[in-house]
Length: 211
Image (tube, rainbow, N blue to C red; front, side):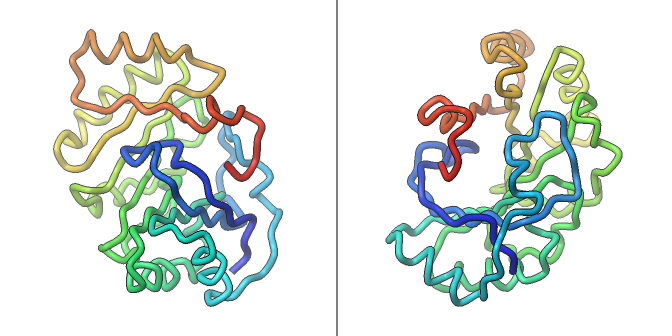
């Protein structure tokens, strides 16, 4: 597999936010979202075997690992890698942009899947069949840049019956939407979704890599 970086930090997003994690960021992405914060992962990386990746992660002494990108599912080796980590006792998260089928992911892994909003310019690339594969402990993340995105997202999760199917997280696009505005909209509408901040950007700064 081509690996952009392997590092340890706190988990910055999802319902696991704040927990120390190891991260494996794979190289390559098929989308170009306007608010992307990991453009360096489009092409940067080195080839590593599955064994070397697992050895590097084990060196941190942590039992939670996230496989991310870029878009990690573009590399077929990711499915075996996730299963190996789980077999070795890790809690495994796989973060995906929602444009590639998740059907081959080990069902023991926790999927953190994006749905791209209109402002991202990438909704047409979504593989909506993925919604059928989501498990109750998986998480659907929607990054929201403005009020239109919010109203669209509110309608999307209702139209697709996502309440109760999996965890749903609304995240303000960092530096674009005031988090307080999104929080107020959610409370006003009494939405049964989770407010999701990228806390690593507040802790370490928005431009810091490997955090």
